[in-house]
Length: 312
Image (tube, rainbow, N blue to C red):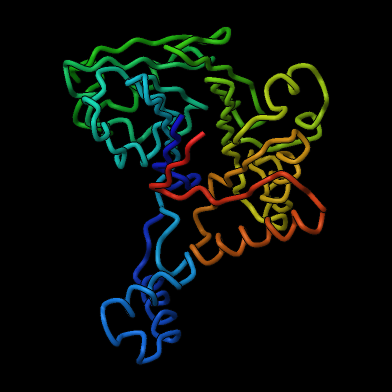
């Protein structure tokens, strides 16, 4: 199972502004010494030694995560944020997929507005299967792609489209997908994929509460001992306190949650648009320091970054 991150920001696509680029360049120049530019190898070593917030970017697109299986050429896609436009379609040695399975956590704009720019949707050889525990998916997408908001209408794009109202666990090829309702304005749903004994959870747009830590049967079945969770970690603890009931969690609560359920890998996700790369890497360091302070063992914490691929 390969998990790909195409969009990781919350609420709004967040471009890297010229001032941020200038600040990165200035910081790089300050760290350099003449020997770092002696030859090509010296330059490579210098660049490789820079901290991640300087030599790369977390990314500015809103949520889109895909899951691929080596022996099943029908990608599973979670949410249609602006990151959907960045998706690399197909891989070396595989034909282009002819079917995609798209699951919606909910229908707020930042989880929808990448779909009109999803190239395979315009291919008559492609079938798109949409899934949600909420009805009216087709109505929502039709509204998204209507005048005056978009020049091409849903009914005119040439792919075959099926809409599936989720009521129970669904089997897609060799894997199964379960869902769970979470706390978010207007509701949001988390999803769990199970394949060959590995369990991956996508849980964005959730304000974690005591109920999510409760040892009831539903929580135990869904979360306990999962291999990996992509979890809403939009805020610092201070910002989360100021934005109670906004439907998002702090990174420290996300760490507590993953540790509580014995989850092995946590990817912080759905970042506050106002946080720049430096701030996000400071949050990652704070999350890892928090692990040490709480003496939490067996949990690996990382940032979800655009273009990242993880294998389970």
